[in-house]
Image: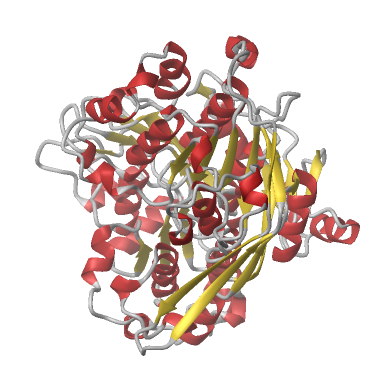
Length: 595
């Protein structure tokens, strides 16, 4: 792209400008991959017809639609914009979930909201596929994040439209729910007579565009991808359309072959080395890996006993329901990350609360995991790690962040002042996470992704022997997730030699960080079991077998990829009992996966 002339839209002088546009193809799913601030939302607004592209001319008069159509003649966008102008394309969009989304529907129930949008009369099928039947009579403002996300997807899918757009559908969803949503969205163009009265012919005329930061889900959901790169808030460039595997791999490599354009000075790969560290750029300069940790307090091997926790809650009708988590005895050692994997509502956060000593039964009881009192306690309170020193990053942003009146720098000085004097912490955590440019901003004005990076920084800067990190990828784009995973692993395991428990639904991120896995089984919201920590191979295979999904590794950058359902590779791995293939898949023929 020529960054001087080939401009699609510019907001104003010295303002953000977008070069190029995604080119959707009827009958296929187009995925958009790029960092926050690269122009994905601007591109969607233009394709909706909500924003008229000014072709770089931000001074009046702006170009007429006829001039815009003429500009794109010879491409698929000429026909697309012609239909938009003539109102022949109806657009349905699932926006990013923001506080205003639920506020607009306050007071309405899930049932009446979906029924009002059910042009296709598919509400029953969609609600069953997304497991919404049990919340149909609940009001929108009472829904959790995951329930609100599935509700938004249901409203969009039930509409009768020609163009479907989905902006970040995986947020707040567990792995199983992400796969269910993926199958539902793909069925819009690949479902045939089951979805549309006109069968395959009607489905072949539908456009589907998705924006997604979970690389495994984007790979599984899309038929083609277009990447966006640039400088956040300054400019964004849309690459040409390519097959999914090639597009994602070129984005991770930082080099677009077709355009001979290098937009990142390092490649991102997920190869696991002897130190169980995955690579982002050149790892040869990691002098911190061999830092002398002598004299630091060590945990050794700590064992925790069988534990049970029951939550009771009162329903709107006065009925009392309960959820019970049974934790199998297990152990952990210094210098490892244990990933907690299971569906939403199966007790992963409850287990973290038990370890942190934050449950009601544990208050005032100083029983510590690994101590004599923990194994011989008679008061019934589960032991915790609180007295050893725990740093806990909760799932949702703590109120102390939003209520703070001051800048990011002042917030860090108040909570992690000692860490700020550590040169390595500033280099390996603050600079790597991109928190330095935020230091002069007000904490209350930060976006979701910026707040998440600050929360991770505060968690890592808090002195502790055990780190509890709950869903660190929420709000982060695809590149920030990989960087955050690398930062957490390098600081906690390689530099400090500490232990971390991690809850993460982004499988790419979880597989890159985990040394061992705790698998959760049972009926979510009713009764679940947290199994003993198992090896990565055993844990991943057990978890994926419960989901009936298989993964393989890409031979170029070793990222996990989901096999298409009932494809040759899917059938082969299931028959061999290898739901997660740890050996690199040398067969690079992407078409084979559709057989």
